[in-house]
Length: 211
Image (tube, one colour):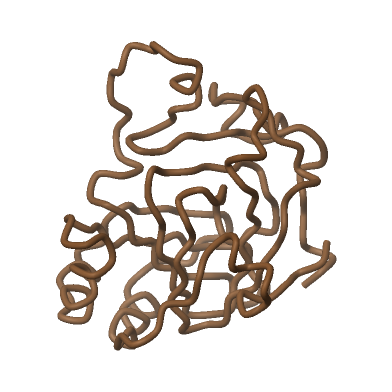
């Protein structure tokens, strides 16, 4: 799979680079105080990051004053497995280079998306990235198996937490997997085994041979 850069023109449809903020204190805490498992761990809100002055300075601008949660997604991964979307952008920041496999919400047809429509983008370490609400995404992929990835995940407070009881009134409700989290799983994924909507068709993409 071809891996593009977030500085390539193609990325403009999926997100943008965010500049002008001091993110080094956040990177320092990610590197020193969050785990790096052999698989993947996601924590919606990390108090050690949440309490940083740098995070408090950044928070008001991300969602125009809405409450923000600063968490992380860390580990080792090279596969697509699933795609998710929220009703808002997500902000990512890595201590090492990482790759995002992305698609577009508008490419979902009858609850299905062909994984051949996905594109991969490499984000350099230390660069804050906005991933638009209409960009389907999931766990980052590492670029160096010896280093793995530690990636900040900033979202509106409550996102990815316990799934609300909404009654299943629409088809899209079948995709809801947590608060503000709609998920399409590949049939080979553990999420599919756990009951997530199987909405990805085609190959479960793996960038291991491309990094």
